[in-house]
Image 1: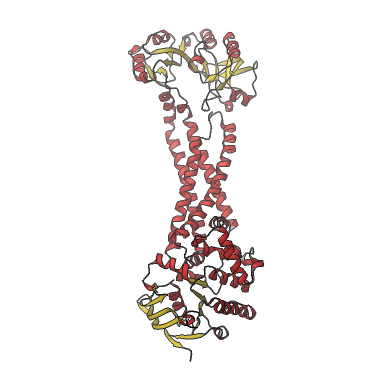
Image 2: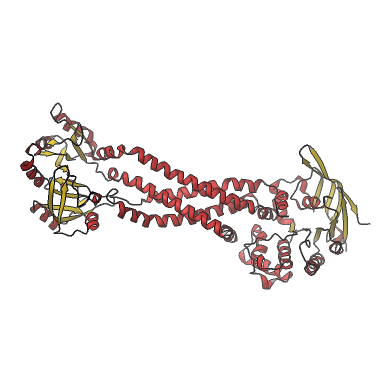
Amino acid sequence: MEKENKTVVRIRGLSKSYVRGTQVIPVLNDINFDIAQGEFLALMGPSGSGKSTLLNLLAGIDKADTGSIEVEGAEITALSEKELSLWRSDHVGFIFQFYNLIPVLTAFENVELPLLLKGLTKEERREHVEMTLGLVNLTDRMEHYPSQLSGGQQQRVAIARALVTDPTILVADEPTGDLDRASAEDVLNLMERVNREFNKIIIMVTHDPRAAEKAHVIRHLEKGYLYADP
Amino acid sequence: MLILKLLFRNALRHRLRTYLTILGLTIAILAFGLLRTIVDAWYAGVEASSANRLITRNSISLIYPLPLSYLDKIKQVEGVEQVSFGNWFGGVYISEKNFFANFAIDSKTYLDIVPEFVVKPDQKQDFLKDRKAAVAGVKLAERFGWKIGDQITLKGTIFPGNWDFVLKAIYKGRDRTTDETQFFFHWDYLNETVKQVEPLRADEVGFYIIKIKDPNMAAEVSERVDAQFRNSLAETLTETEKAFQMSFVTMTEAIMTAIQLVSFVIIIIIMAVMANTMAMSVRERMGEYAIFKTMGFGWLHIAILIFGESIVITALGCIAGIALTFPAAQMFSSQLGAYFPIFNVKTQTIYLDILAAFIVAVISAVIPTYRAMSVSIVDALRRIG
């Protein structure tokens, strides 16, 4: 399908280094690749290889030293903090290893949070939240607090929160890292389904080869250099 | 609405810490309010003073008397409408701990010049008819359970002996600031007795109280009165009632200044406690603020969350503190009413409580908010793994 192959994210000459005292530590070196619409990309590599840094740059929560990232034609590396903030609310959904739900809000309220920035009415928000929680099979747990949910359920709420604003990209940092095997499988299947049914770009950092198997494309990072899956 | 809900839930996330902080705030606001009320009570006499009344006393000191013969001369001074006089009696009721102000007054004129002491007409008539009659303020009567017709004996300190009185009238204050704890009796009764026991002290008064026609002419009338008695054996000092009352207050001004300082120190201490609570809360939630930022929430939202939480906690402490101030003031007043006859919590004090609490809330949230806003998302996320 032609539409699915359209390039949405274009990364060119991306480099990033950290300064520790007088020492400059390069983390990413001249990264170049494209991500097409509907692509499920897994970033793999050993600890310290720069995969989380690359994910952060793609999600617009960190700044590159050099190079550019274009998402749907918009050069996000040139955006100010405020512009990036707005851009993230429209284009990026985050899924974290430890779910990072707000513990004092119910599942419903956690998913509702990103919608507060969208200028929707309460009723519209309710519709969106119920629909999204339905998608992750948690309509019966809407009024539960995170502490009343299992790890897998919490991660599904986190996925619903990431999806509810219909973002361009879903970024997931070790989404199954804190889950048992069965829950991890559920979460991965859900992500695969989201990717398939909604044609969403998913960029996932993982150490887990089983998780990476779900991806269409696997890229390896080592010492800041990117390699495609052989 | 969700943000508001989040503010309250965040505020109560560490219940023990929050409750202890609220308790601290409550005590601080209560102490602040009571100390301000003590200062107000101290100045109450000054505030309750009438602008159209002057007090004339011996220029050397209030303890030296003035001749009764000055009365007619003062009446002749231009601008004077009415004159009365009195003596501080200094009588003790049963025991010295039962202190209250008691005066011998010119009964025919005094209550007319001081209309804020409201006496029922029939009781006033009874008072005027009986030489041994006395008038007491309603709070004083309540304090000792006096009723009309009761016999009251005061032990004289300035005028020795036991002095018997019959309570013929009870006055009420016209205004909220009127002192209802005073005791008055006939100056004639005092003078007649003094004539027999110590004739040299007879026909002397402690002070004259003058009602003037125009409050704007107070300085001129005072000057005219004092001019009448210049170079006499008992020169006078005439001043407005306010200035007269103020002369008592200024004697203890250093104590009042200290009390005011302590009240502000209390606010500074609770500000430090509150700032500590907010700093701990924000440090613990730094990762959550990062999550908010990843979703696109900006600095304003983060600031609303932190300032809002600070305001919620402070408001709860402030409300509890204000609510407790009234019964505490009531208790304080009933225990120390003799020294603080007017012990009312003023509306201004409540506004000051609210202002102090608001300042505490805002200042406590400034640094935590700055930290939450300035930390990068990546650094904050790293803290939560």
